[in-house]
Image (cartoon, rainbow, N blue to C red):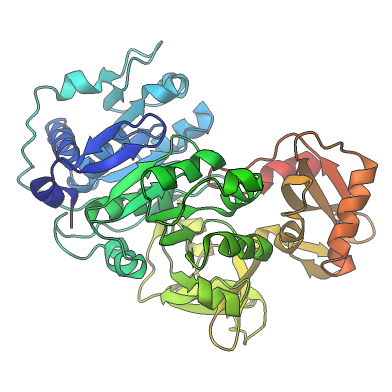
Length: 511
């Protein structure tokens, strides 16, 4: 399905509601706005397979640009607006953008990027971009463009970039679907619609940045199926609870750091909001500590649903609350693709053995744009259609997957593998810890030693006493050899807004 379907039947129904401002975009407005932009792109010379780059904060216009590309056979590359100007410019150049659309909400970045890129079509919405004369005004340019749907509407795709937690962001380019935008065959609609019960009655809360794969794809899927998306301008734990109550939210999607922030609200604040409308709370994007997930189920009930996937769409697993309570820590069984766990030589391992997690598909589902070397590195040594993003884990006897960490993050101390995720999970709910990252640092005797880098809660005194307390806390929960040898304290940990630790930045401080 397609938002245009619902524009014909429920034109005044909100497709988007902004959580803070209350600004609304109806299905009719979404249909007309995306059709105008699609016609504009066509008149400007963009053709099927070209790329539109989008640099924006969370606003309703994101969906106009997204659906304009989707109904024009174009790729849309939504760029992380927290990147620096050179990093943003790199992505705009690397994706080969023929059009660049920016928001006045990120005017400083938009102005700085303009100096580093040559893109034929440049549009800015929401106001002027001071110091950047190259952007045409979005509303003025589209004012005289027809809102009639284009005669040809081949389905486009997104071409998103990895978060770059272990290196430079990589462009993930799938093949275009080869069908019209209003024809069946969309994977997200077919897979997640029935799985989570998305339909015209859905009210979906999206608290994360829309440049990220899951918020963008899931909220667009809800719109395609006729539901309403409530978008937070930025995540705030108490506001999220207020929005669930105010809009009778039925579905939502989170990352584990959001759960931690909500759990650390006072009991008075947590119990002040009616969350009874919430039927499905999805989480993904980063590992969720067992204690955190158990606490969320205790609070919200058995509405938590987890999936494990990647922007590369190599495969997916699913697990609901009941299954997870039977197997705490699992991310589920395969729902798309077949899971293969292999050692460093590519030999498939048995149940309970930790190795690299591959998904087997009929064909390789993606390639890294302009980077055949990384595409090859993501493949199994002997099987092109087995691909990985570098995660480590194991399967149990029933095919449930348990993740241990990213291969790139593994600490090898005295010849023994230590997975930082396990140590981070042990510290996540300590009452004095706001955030934590664990890395390996050089050690003359052991090769590497475990170091925890902790952001303490506001008002907590840091120093040797707290360091000893945290180390003993970990020793009481997991094997002593895995506990940090030292703890450093920081005012800030580098995370993407979707919750992933950017460990390469931490490693650069120490290694």
